[in-house]
Amino acid sequence: MEKQGVYLGPRLRRLRRDLGLTQADMAADLEISPSYIALMERNQRPVTAETLLRLAKAYKVDFSDFAEQTGPDLIARLQTVMRDPIFADIDLVPLEIADAVHSFPGIAEAMLRLYTAYKEEQFALADRRQGGFGDGAGASGDPVAAVRNFLSARRNCFPVLDVAAEKLSTKIAEAGGLPDYFKQRHQLRVRRLPSEVMAGSLRRLDWHRKDLLLDETLDTASQNFQLAQQLAYLEFDQEIGTATQEGNFETESARRLAHRALAAYCAAAIIMPYAAFAKAVETRRYDIEALSRQFGTSFEQTAHRLTTLQKPGHERIPFFFIRVDVAGNVSKRLNSGNFPFARHGGGCPLWSVHQVFTTPRKVVTQWLELPDGQRFFSIARTVSSGGGAFGASRVERAIALVCEAHHAERLIYSRHHPQAAAPTPIGIACRLCQRTTCTSRSEPPIGRQILPDDYRRTEAPFGFSDS
Image 1 (tube, rainbow, N blue to C red):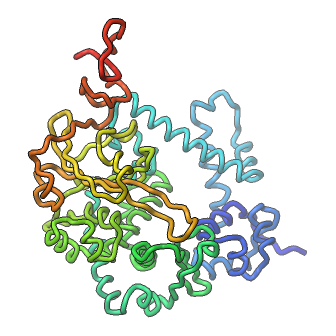
Image 2 (image 1 turned 90 degrees about the horizontal axis):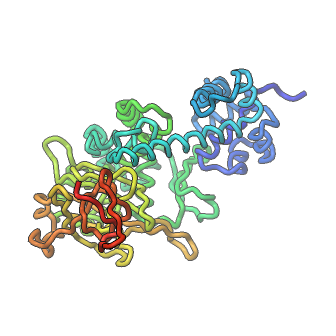
Image 3 (image 1 turned 90 degrees about the vertical axis):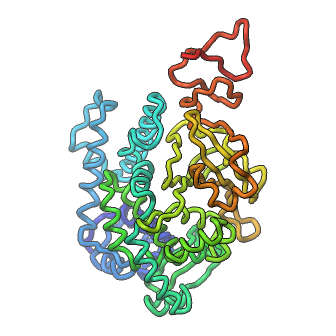
């Protein structure tokens, strides 16, 4: 007779993927066959009480409410979705929704993902129609925007986390480094394994074998950052949780993104302790490459850390940070300064951050001027991630740090690019820029009447009225 249990297939599969495990990995940890893991994930076998205990022991997970959350949570989410006016003409009774969740949980999850993507696109469209910029409109429904607002409101600075990280950094130095500290404090052995063994994971914590595994293709700076971030998860859970709660996030995705962002913040603060780093930036005049060599960090990690130096009484230059790919997609944005940037609709093509792909790893400086006369100083350069072995995929991106013009004299980069140089006239986005002569424009500004070109064609793509 088969042991009684509960059917938790989708939740078990999500747990495994969140842990970065293959079915074979989990089977080895639980001392059962990979085929049985596959059957449980497809709800063709129940998860028995004995298996739940093994899961809890192997992965330090609290399963007290594991079974109860599986059905009702998914049902409630799907019922909320079905109340959207777009489904008004479909007669769906609660019982049918519950039946769909219990019988086809994968389809229900797919429906929720599609609806989330649909709503995010609606928010983006609304912002474009209103000419909105920043992350105000629709941020509550967009987890990325919600987290960016959360960080921006605090100028990307969390002094409590900096203090805790600084103390931990001292202990790590006394222990002889991060690997030694993991061994002494957590009885965890740091191991580096080939990418094919890591199966798509850069870092994996194996409590069962007491191993902290890293992809061996990671460079030294990336390995140290991954170790420091794992340490933040282990030792700063309460501090990170308290800071995350201050965001009052409306979605679980936003909460998780904020939690991850703060863990990364702690990692940077462990490797680049606030007091030592703040002193070094003034000594080296914000030379990012020199600071990177001093602290053993990458160019991007160092530039990112520069945005966090707003601790009351110990502030440094407030920067705006952005990372884009060759298509102009923004994958990271942090703002401790006062630089406006469009949430949707793209940035200005005249800004050098979109052009540095033609000069890899060369620092490019630029004076910028917005239509209202505000001036800024920009530092841009390409960075890469991945690689590390022949045939390994590599991603090229560009990052930029921007500060207000009156701060630029404190930067080593302004030494050969004085403010007397003519600034590049840029806009927040084409729809918000009123410059009539810009030949790089991709669309007309909001509120301007397009002029006919029957008898006169301007150099700019669009001719439009002055009012």
